[in-house]
Length: 243
Image (cartoon, rainbow, N blue to C red; front, side):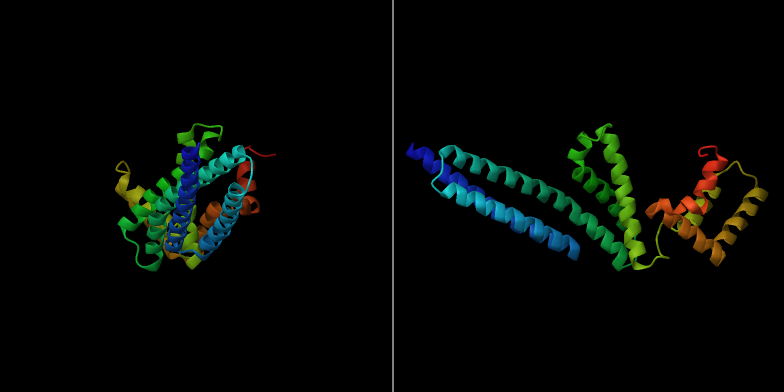
């Protein structure tokens, strides 16, 4: 009996030490991630967890029923598992946020963009792993869709946050996409190719058209409901999709 009690004491103290280590690791990871709101929200969440942990520890240390003491130990273990899971998520998020920052703080290279997309997809797939199991669709399909969507939104938000006209998902990207598609289409005759290239170049050089193209893409990505009265309703009516 004494051995069991001693082992239980060691377990509760072990869980307490692990808890403090996990909290320290998480705060350090969030600090490296760098966003003030990120750090502030993490501190609030972990302060609540610390209060719960202290309450459970005091409950265990008091003269309570042994079964309740075992329950306290179990809850501590579950809290530490929860923190371990968040350490894994934050460890994957850190290189993603660094890749995003490198695209903002300096000139973005292809390596930076590839890392941003790859790390972003990996991060969101891990973050939404448990959510995907109850999504109602195939988990891999849900994860693939939400990872692509959230990564795209993050990149858009980062660049628009600096300058609303500098989003990589703006008119410049649209023009480059059209030019690449034009060059890739080998079935087009030279006259048509030259005519369409001039049209694309005109689209890129005209300030009003460039501004409105960027505005449209910004609405499409950030606030698609804003397009309802700016052409979406008419488009749906033309397609016979709305009365």
